[in-house]
Length: 337
Ligand code: NAD
Ligand code: UD1
Image 1 (cartoon, rainbow, N blue to C red):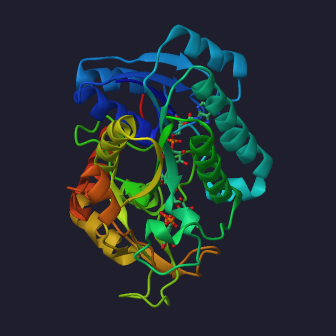
Image 2: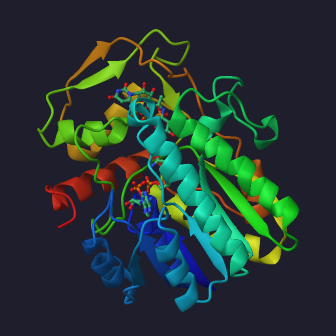
């Protein structure tokens, strides 16, 4: 298939492009490089032998988008482009709605106008809110989001479902990611957070590099194995493989499916910290800090639907996730240059 990958130079998008290319698909990347780097293209080229065609285009730019669709014929679109910082979304809601909603609407308009029937969308476990108990099942539906970022994911899910109802032959897979971490084992691709990381593993990576003093563990009085928050971490390469299966599934079906992508296992903050210590061979300092507002105690995925519909299961464990994350940070002390 010839696949348009929006946000394809980003963390998950870049790994997905590698898996798509290695599975015989063609990709065209569209990204405004707001949170990624043009050198990612060369690295994808190194890993696959193919440097994808690239458009430096913003999904908010209707004319720019139109040009991309005029110049290519796509069988499918995997839509990663978007902003993802929860805290920033609370202080800049308009920026998030303009990017993640208005930008996405422009993209969907083009998909329909140019007859691109298949779409895979990056949703998030955040749409379960704090309304349900883990394991989160797709059939639970959507909960109440606690921040504009989460609301943009929930709204996109609804918009795409409506588009599938209104446009015959349209096919969508809404992938609800749990907590993607890790990096490509080559050390060539990985996550490069802007400024001080908000998410756990990027923060631990900075502590391991000696760039931050210690980890703040947000709460140790949750009802969990050791009192710290439990999450379902998934290796980014496993997540990338799920996208290959999802886009191939979309091509063979019509309608809209919501599918969780997680390992189905939960790890506490301290368990992740200890796995990272093992990976980097150092003891990493931490202090217990107050709970972070909006956090829930436990989140992990029900994985049956991914297995049934996509034949997808994760391969990599938490040790491998931490080892690859550490390897990437050692190989790229200044990010992807
Ligand atoms: P990322 O920031 O690394 O990648 C997103 C890419 O989109 C970046 O390259 C950025 O430059 C690009 N982009 C942003 N706004 C754009 C715009 N208006 N026009 C064109 N390009 C634009 O993030 P990621 O971790 O790879 O996440 C990819 C997608 O998955 C996002 O939609 C994110 O919300 C979603 N998601 C991520 C996580 C996670 O933990 N990383 C969890 C759930 C969902
Ligand atoms: C967060 C977002 C979620 C988003 C996801 C992926 C919040 C409330 N939720 O999920 O909407 O989809 O990232 O981008 O921001 N922790 C620490 N110390 C730290 C950082 C994290 O103890 O410095 C703990 C957290 O309390 C949590 C766990 O580590 O228990 C994982 O946190 P994080 O990596 O931020 O992911 P989520 O909170 O699951």
